[in-house]
Length: 114
Length: 113
Image (cartoon, rainbow over all chains, first blue to last red; front, side):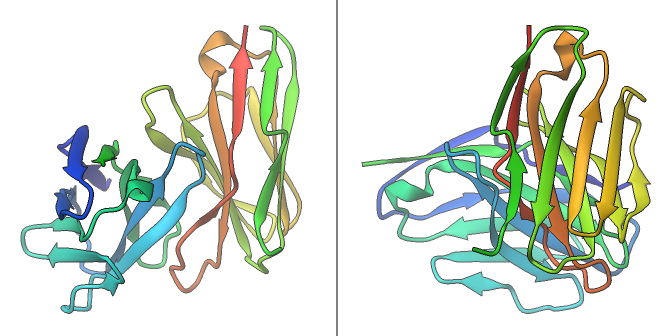
């Protein structure tokens, strides 16, 4: 079974600065997908970014980028130029290829301070 | 608007009652899910249906029964509600064969008193 670990229950960052959220996972699979979801206080689950394991290039979406280290089974999220609206729970998720069973980490609560 | 919509948004009920949560998606997806988010924000998959067929069934009490009348709908019925059932329940949908990300509804906060 795949497990996803987010070792930082809470983090904070000053507005306009950069923060990195950690995620590690455990799998024996070679092909899989990784995701970061954001859950603001509104409770909505919003996809932030996704990464295919077969791609070496790190995914980027505007201010959000990942550092995917396949050998280390690490998938961290970097948020640049943090904004107040980035305050949310962030969940790392794993999905095996051909299987829609998405597994989530325990989440990291990020607070962006003015 | 294209979306995953679930109703009701909030549900407060007493122990022992039976309740249902409805979910509909108009994204054309063929796979739908129910997740449970507990008070510590941990998200755990409960069920997944592909074209009305059950494909994931985690260890969930049989008081929980999903029903999928068609691929655009997945409802969750809960019998004999218990205090521990209090949580936020999320419906989600995706395409099965292309490992697409899940699109979530806004959640139903269930409170059992």
